[in-house]
Length: 399
Image (cartoon, rainbow, N blue to C red):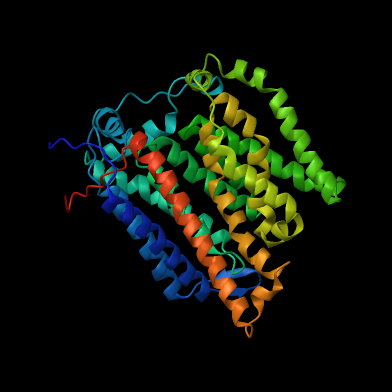
């Protein structure tokens, strides 16, 4: 096999950017064709074709990529060589699961199931990325509103690219996103079942079970008592402080599990750059509290951002950086409401169709938003490409 080396590749960059834009355009087309009947979306054939095209594109790009020791995803080679071609014995021990030790069982079970039919890792990838791509599209579809500026959700593609390396965790994320969609429909038993599946793919999925408890508590207890906006904000800040105070106990719980290596990484140094967008979003959320909550369907993204804020001390001081990734889509959708709030709130002149200056300023404003999203996407991809071996992208059909 030809040996490849990872490096920043502009062709791969524009390919990933193009995939993200094309998928969002297809989603936007599909959703605008949909009709609302009795609070339920009815999709015509054109919408299904658009979603089908987006799904096929995502699965094709991921499953036909070439994987070697240096490209195609840092961990993908190990999963291909170590786990797929040479499967480990299936292991299920309830004590190991409860103590977060050893491997999660469902990934090994999936490997054994696919190996009954083939030893071709590209077919294995088709199975994996069908699940991942389906979950991303379902979540975006469930949360799409005409009030949101969908282009802001472009960084969703970083979750997709992250799955090139972190396969087990990405399967966990996929079932977590599906669980959140079930929560939106108040199908709590389905949501809990999917969360357990996510947990058995990767133990970090336990966070989603905690998130479900949080959402249930907010809906049935907290929001009934704290109807005042200021009290609500104060409650979130108190929860944040309480989690911060419990960090030493949380670290003690993690020590001795398979995740204690993350604590050692924290000891080497803490960077707050990764939490900066969340902090900015919380400030914007507190500023436009009622407007942003009102725009969010079933308030699930709103709850997700608030919960993400509350657990930030765990992310920073326990090295649980993947906890943030669970709520990336929630953060993006909440950000997507901000342009329309600004344009229709204090700055109503943006809505004037007669004032040429208003139209010009509105165009400049949205162009600035688009430029900012592309810059942020580029920054995140640059951070990811070395540690995750995402570039150059090499396909089995072209090299």
